[in-house]
Length: 160
Image 1 (cartoon, rainbow, N blue to C red):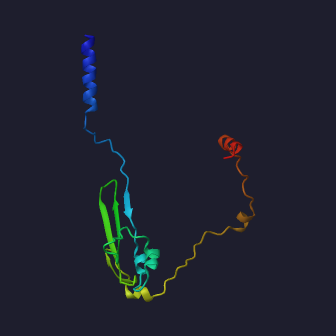
Image 2 (cartoon, rainbow, N blue to C red; image 1 turned 90 degrees about the vertical axis):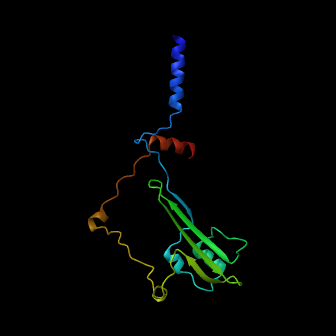
Image 3 (cartoon, rainbow, N blue to C red; image 1 turned 135 degrees about the horizontal axis):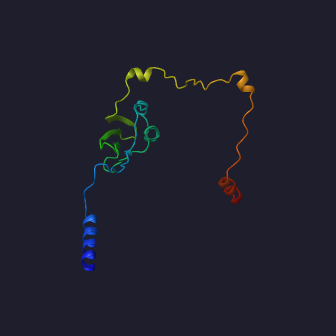
């Protein structure tokens, strides 16, 4: 009888461990995966024909692919996979240089700025109202500082 119980328990454990069924209420967490260079329309709009490689690198960042067989071309690739839905978004952008190392042309998924956007002045500053204190609120003293807790006092005593 004891042998049967041990054998039944071992068989039950083996079946339970080999179970590959996942109930629908068990949802594992999947992270969002973002890879490559994030290029915005504003960054691409700063590119001008004739810029040097260093200027392009300053504006767009280092390229993902700089092929030794195509030294005049830099590729910027971006992909984003949503962890919850599994949807994947990808963009490709290429920068081409002439033989002197100057920007010649660009191509890819990110659109180049229009001529109106290049000539129109852009205001880079804006005023943000943080709120003003009324007269009586400015005269009111600040509340006293809270004393540190036991853990903070212990860490201060140790020098952390």
